[in-house]
Amino acid sequence: MTNFNFPQPWIDPLGEGFCSRFLEKIFLKILDLIEDDHVIFPPLLNVFKALELVKYNEVKVVILGQDPYHGLGQANGLAFSVPSGIEIPPSLKNIFLELNSDLNIPLRLDGDLTGWARQGVLLLNTVLTVEKGQPNSHINLGWGEFTDRVITKLSEKGNVVFVLWGKSAQSKINLINENRNMILLAPHPSPLSAHRGFFGCKHFSKINLFLNQAGLEIIDWHLD
Image (cartoon, rainbow, N blue to C red):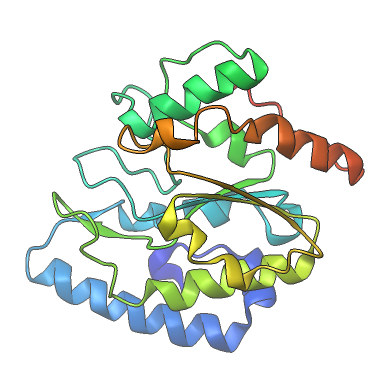
């Protein structure tokens, strides 16, 4: 499991046998691609960055993405996030616009969302790797088996807000027990769909209302 820098606190919740079998299988597939000169994003040590930053029992919010950014230097292992100094992608710009509209938080020039992750926001792509310049290139690599298990186990934990933006994320809704958790739905923040209901969804304030009512510490959506 060390090849991927897999975070130890997630092994028990997901099952040691499952993790061992799955990680060996997926690692061999990716290793074959790398040996054939495919460029994979994010860097292997950041593939599980989202899980590394948030322990299972500390997850309060799950924001589902699809697959990592496929441009050079963009993917940092967190859904929607980019490293500091990288131009903010259009979908993330729209997320910041909605955050400003909802909670009057100033627009940001830095797209690194690590500050949210450290407060219990799991920024999880359902596919954790991608080939350079080829969106959705690893959609059939097998990642769905793993991320479906993460979603299912977090649903069993309860008191988690699942944020599903767009059809891809919303296809996971049947994995979530709505009686034990909160589910928030909206169109994807992409410029192609944000005006169909993402803008004005007020998900950030709704998340904090749920957390407050559940007796949990709310998220400070400021990243500074």
